[in-house]
Length: 194
Image 1 (spheres, rainbow, N blue to C red):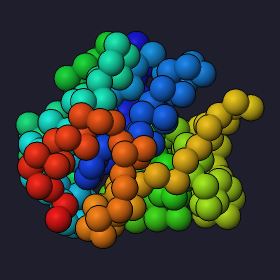
Image 2 (tube, rainbow, N blue to C red):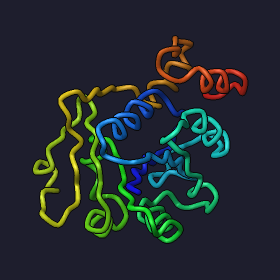
Image 3 (tube, helix red, strand yellow):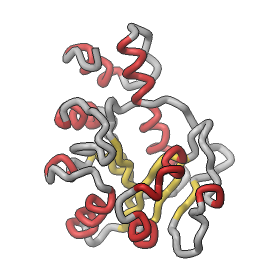
Image 4 (cartoon, rainbow, N blue to C red):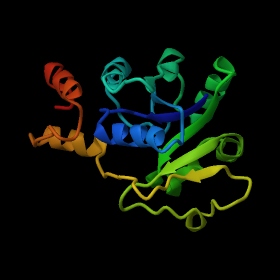
């Protein structure tokens, strides 16, 4: 089975994550999408408790959108290469790709073992408004690099981000249309991001 790993902080998970996941399935880029919250961020971003982020991410599950707690269970350091190796070892019958937003292209060469990553696994690059989608610009155009730019005439993109949601929560601004209702309720009940 072809699995797309959508990794990230999910701090909090939002409708942008759903939009990406559903379109990867709808346009046949993957058979399943596994949302994979990190235990800690590789660039040392400040995060709320990993179990709270995992609980919220579970609200996004449906038939072919799964949640993997592999990073949280193994308390990994947030390095994508370690996650991909763990997944390949624990699920040898699946083929894994990693999905990232085009906003990550400019810093991709800062990722740990980035060349091993991009020559071993396919990296699906989902367009994000305002961020360049040109591999050549970032000196990432190479026949050995397994980038797959996600394109389709009916593809919908969004600039919803967890950062924006946290800022709106801190300034008491409406977030109803940015994340699933269950996630919003969980945030309110647990007084997160205040």
